[in-house]
Length: 273
Image (cartoon, rainbow, N blue to C red; front, side, top):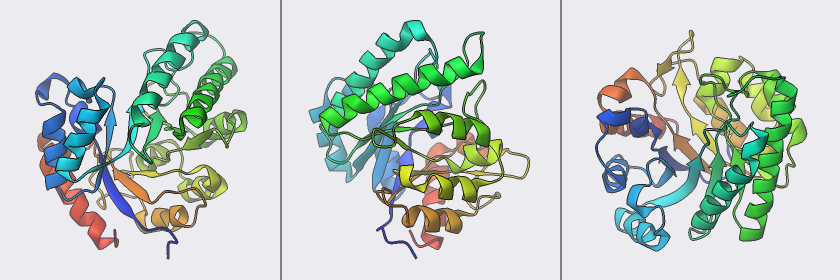
């Protein structure tokens, strides 16, 4: 039984992954997510569109849609691993932290460190940790929590358990939290419950995704993710804010994003959320 009241949000990557095939805007996302039965949204720098420099207008649009901004997510072409791009990456982090500060309780989620250049991996971990920690300092001053979101996508630096251990050893847990993504963890290593438990104090909110036994994206509840176990572990974590953010990357979602996220929301009701 969780100690924290659960709230269910939706990530906008379900539409972002369509690339040029998606021709809508942020208001279309708000409508689809609200119609799907969600209480919150995690939006990315790619999908924020015309609201990028208009937080007050975005707040009004959220209010009219009945949605809360759970988190603002962004990445970088540098993969947060290029020393010469640290200053630019921190400028971007500050921009989005300042944006998120207009939304009480909203976090900033920084994308996975990624390998975009030659050279030893150890050095890349150090650079990424410097960027994350310094962004966390900006966040603390602005009253916005910052968290890192490891992924299993191409060239990620944060793929298997050893990678998670390496980056967490370098991050200040008071400055940088963690957004565990169940799908990405399962694609990289099979000890998801142990990973979540070991680093439970760092959990801020959860990305819930499912994969089949081969690591192919699946609709929630159709793969190998033990969602009730994830909810139980997160619910007892001291810094978990209660948000379960569903993110769908399956072929089903590619064919019908709005329909897929609505189905996932119905699935979550079966888990009591």
